[in-house]
Image 1 (cartoon, rainbow over the protein chains, first blue to last red):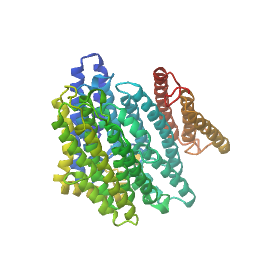
Image 2 (cartoon, helix red, strand yellow; image 1 turned 90 degrees about the vertical axis):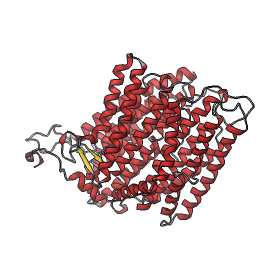
Image 3 (spheres, chains in turn green, blue; image 1 turned 180 degrees about the vertical axis):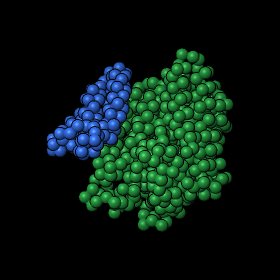
Length: 508
Length: 109
């Protein structure tokens, strides 16, 4: 049993607790602890991803209790990838926040660590109830982070965010109750094994539970018609928080990939077809996000709607649920998380230099550093709208290719391509308003600090990096998709209890 | 027994939904609490109902209730309590900032 598997959960937990103790000491000490703890997640995640890449699921039996009785953490290719992505995004947004965002409210660093604890835990756990607990941890931290900095706009957004998610949590619990009542287990592997031997009477109940879970995860992922909270929350959140939240919608997508592909995949045995349920909603999400991006009057709102578009594109690919489509979806997931995270930081940098106009798309003073910010905006716009030569182009191409095998190909192609065109229109409108149609005076002399430039460029460089190493990245995501669809492999690995040292008398 | 439980859960959740749709912070918090009560009772009985038996797996008791839902519901109660506390503080903050108890922060017209 490899104890490093639990490190991505323990490290932020210990760091978060330590940061609460350090509350009375200076800001520098807190920043130091927080940055070191977050940056340390990158080598840990890289190591874990290396282990997972070998192809076998690594199971961590918490407390050495055998599955399905104890809680298990499962490290496979998908969770390794998500852990690495989280650690990179978190490090970038934390480095950005050290520029001053972290002083706008209390306990930023501790909350940030607890948020990471919840996200990493959700990616690792192999137990449905444990997934609920980690969801709650990341939610309570996000409730606090979303009002970080204060102000009426944030309070209003947080009110909606909190109430919606509390209702979502209740629905989650109802679904878990139904799963436990019918399948008699909450261990994902055990549930997947038992669903096949379900009697005909219970299949409807299990299907209902699966759809309730889709509702909950869809709410987290901001799938239409559950995604209306996202634009107002993300556009009003502090930049570093909004950047970290780029992974939050992906937690919902991850949960759909994990739970629905594993347990609720077979329509015969209480499952349902993702293509019938998820695909139409995902395409509608793309349409809504595109209309929002076109109508937005502020750059941060535009970026928020681009997150909605990316969620729609991602879930459309998940909805196709073939091996190629899942591989393309995972590639797009990495790309869109890094680029939208970078765009939130960039929007803040731009807004800060324009004085009162902030990031509003109207005629105002020019930014203080037009060349630097203009170049960054151009690169980000190319990446996010899916133009060559950056990774957005490759990601969308893979998704379109994967859609060819489906009957819904005209819908997918039409929506994704037309939406791409309108995203380009909305971004060029934003770029024109901010950088070209300006008054003669320069904006506020608040030049970009080194750390802020580094974190923003680092995230945007991800798009270039993904393109250069595209073949290797795609190899990995294809292997991940294959592992995801190999349900019996997952079930066998978890229930084998290979590395449990419990006495034989207890195992019976 | 099952009928009583299902009616109780149904009434709790229905009242909760009604209160949340009032869209004013205090009823919304009450509604969330009622829904979580309903959900907790639902979780509690998800392992099946057993009447007239001790809640323990003792050797002389042949039919005993499932202990796992009890552990689950305990966790859910604790989490729900924390979340409700946060929602109340947030509602107070919103009330102070907007001088309105509507969840969208608008004043009465």
